[in-house]
Length: 229
View (cartoon, rainbow, N blue to C red):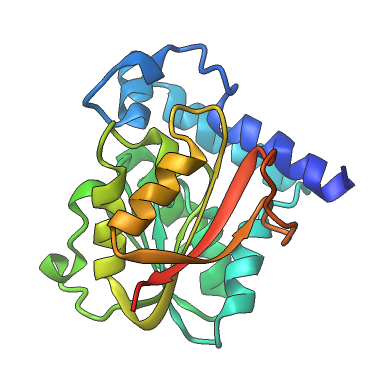
């Protein structure tokens, strides 16, 4: 394993907790699992924010996902950061010269994004109900990035709906990039079935954000998706 790959494994664990989910939030049905974590521990969002601020001060590379998205796009592209958290991915892409909108279900994380990464438009919202034209954002996106393990924190049986809503927000030629880990209650096979049902096709499947190929035993998936023709 390369040092960069090891660093990203560590970052994924730090960001979203142990794979086994010691809170037991994954056992609850019908509720967004991040919202369930916050309901159980109101300080969780603040802890999450401060943890990433500390890593940034320590010089940890937090921009691997954003560099991949940036490499896919011409300067000045429109990017939706879906499940943006405190804004590290969208903030980087804004500084790189892109037009960024970020959406997250947690208002505390959105406030941190506004404080730490001014410039993009940060919005509180549930990806299941994503409807940016209703909020005056009528132009579509060249890329939608859903980093970390956001897909595994969605409420049960809403994954396909979220993929459909993302697809509806793409410009012609736009692509969706989603990354999440194994062992979190949503298998890669289930995801790929939902991708097909949502009218999307995988262009590329990777096992890391630094372009390592996806294999049968990979424990992380980065999927670059386009609308089916």
